[in-house]
Length: 379
Image (cartoon, rainbow, N blue to C red; front, side):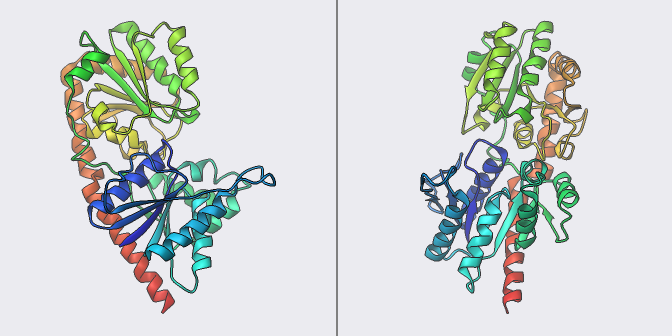
């Protein structure tokens, strides 16, 4: 198939999933055309089945904000015509599904079906804003296919938007051959020169991730035992996290790595992963850690309970329960055998439910189903 994929190319879950999906599809000999304003993070431009088409947005004094949605719709149509796309797959409803709807209308009577994948904040935050709700609801209902990354998000979508059409749950995934525990002794020695346990966090450092809670948890752990904290990512709350690290005099124990592409090379050196988010529609970072045999302490919110089983392959807390998280962390890190056992169970469960080798065929079957249905409707 020839598939167009649009996503935000930024350091967030929806962009990462869309990019990984494109690369997995390319590995199965599909031609994948990314359409966005910048190359998505983690995209491999050296793959002969992967192509990138930049959306250029002109700036005029008349516009306070460049009309990206319109420029994107035009580029989608151009790529459809030039590359004979079979379908468009857009990730994150706003504005991508609206742009795809415009592109499909402009392409008529030629057939350009599009699928919308809902990832989380497009429904729970942006989409539920009254000013965006009607257009989000309309674009979802007009999509030729709709998927959600978790049962939680499916339920929220049906509740918030009163959607009458079917929505398929296809969960996020991880490449279980790539995300595997391969410790790097030199890297570990750089972070923890005297063999201290390493706690890790990966996110876009937005307020919903509660990055300062990660620092607070680590501070309480550090008060009980030697340890190091590695923070991967960047975003608006990085300054607050750096300030808290200085305030608690933890500069020698906390490493800020910024944005990293090949996170599987880093996760293997963690002993514990922290994800104290206010809300997660799935928790992709937690899954990536689990695949690398790293136990996770995360919040019992959104879709996370679909990924982590409490006291089996990780621990679940309520948002803001810093002391509880620190207690679990100290208990786990004080018993190396318990940490290893829980980490091994984490990988077993990640492989059982969320391996790319199992999830990607679900997308391929869904594509074929949508194409068959649109052909039948056209006939």
